[in-house]
Amino acid sequence: MNRSSLILISIFFLVLGCEDDNNAQENSLASRIDKIMEEETDFSGVVHIGTLENILYSKGFGYADRENQIANDSNTVFDIGSITKPFTALGIVKCQELGLLDFDDTLEKFFPEVPDDKKDITVEQLLTHTSGFADAIGDDYDEISKEMYITQSFDTQLLFLPGERYGYSNVGFSILGIIIETVSTSYEEFLNGQVFLPSEMKTAGYLIPDYSTAIIANGYDDLGLLGTPGANLGKPNEQPWDTDGPYWNLKANGGLLMSANDINQYYKFIKSDLINEINKQKMYTKYIQEDDTSILYRGLGWGILDTSDGLAAKHDGGNGIFFADFVYLIEEDVFVFLASNSYRESQGDLLFQIIKELSIKIPNN
Image 1 (cartoon, rainbow, N blue to C red):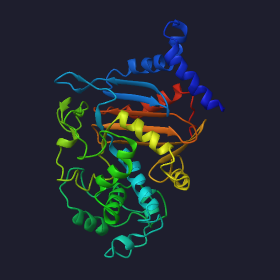
Image 2: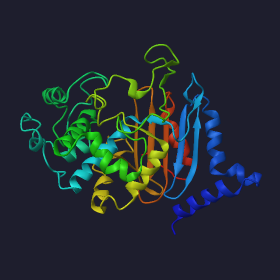
Image 3: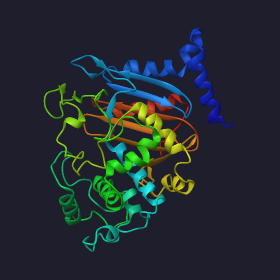
Image 4: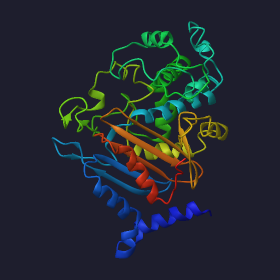
C-alpha cells in the first residue's frame, strides 16, 4: 500500500472515529477544513471531498435561496461553468469508443463548408485548446442558432496556426458539442445516455433531469459586477435559453447543472473501466503547457498538474456569479469539489487551501 493510500485511510478514521478525543478531533480533516471555512465568512456554496468508497467531508454554506432561507448542501444544483468542458471531452471519448469519430479527424470531415484555414484543425486540437479559435464570439445568453454559430465561428480569424500553441477556447468546445450532434443525437441526450445515466447522476444536464423537486441555487451578485450588490439574479435555467438548453455561446463549453452528489457519481465513472485504459491515458497526457510559467498542462478537456502524489486532473469554471472547482488525483483515490452561487475574488485560492489539508503538495512551478 502506498503512502497516499495510508494518508487517506488515516483521514477517514480520524473523521469517523475521534469525536470523543478532543486532541484528535482538533487535527481531523473535518475540523481543519471547518477552521478554513470559518474564515470564509462570505462563502455561499458547498465543499465536497471523497474517495471511491467514502465521503470524507461534505458541507453546505450559505443559502441556495436567501429569500426563503433554503440552505446549500450536497443536493443543491449549481451551474458548474466550464467544468462542462471535461464532460464534453468525455462525450467525444465515448464517440470515439463507439466508432463515430477519431481524435485525428479534421473539421473538414464534419463540416464540408469549413474555410481552408480551419479545415485541417483536428478533434484533438479542439480538446487541448490548440486549435487557434478565439475564446468566444459572443455573450453566454446571446440568441444564436447552431447554423449561425458555425458560420460566425468559421468566419472569425484564427489567433494562431492550429497546433502552434495553447489558447483557451470556448468556441472550440462548442464546436465539439456540435460534432457530437453531427455524429449522434443532441448534445444533452448523448451525454445523458452515455455518461449521466450510467453514472447514476440524478440532476446533471440542462433540461432532461426532473428539476421539479430539486433545489437549484439562485445566483447572487454580491460583488455588484452586473448591477446592485447582492442582487438575486435567479436560477441558471431561468436565463435566456433556447428550447433545448443554452444557446451555442454557452452550450457544451459551460453551463451544465448538477449537484455535489452528482460529481461524486461522476468521479466513480471516470475511475471505472467504463472508459478504456488507452483513452484514459490520452485524457491525462500532457499535450501542451499553458505557458512558460504555468503549473497547468492540457490533456483532453482537463488541466493536468503535478502533485506530491502524482498527476492530478483539474478544471474550474465561473461566470462572475457561479463558480466551481474540481480536482482529483489520477493515480490515487481522492477528489475535491467546490461550488458557489456567489462569486468572490478569493474563490480560486480556497481549493488549494483544502488540498494542503489532504497532505498533497503542488509545486510552485
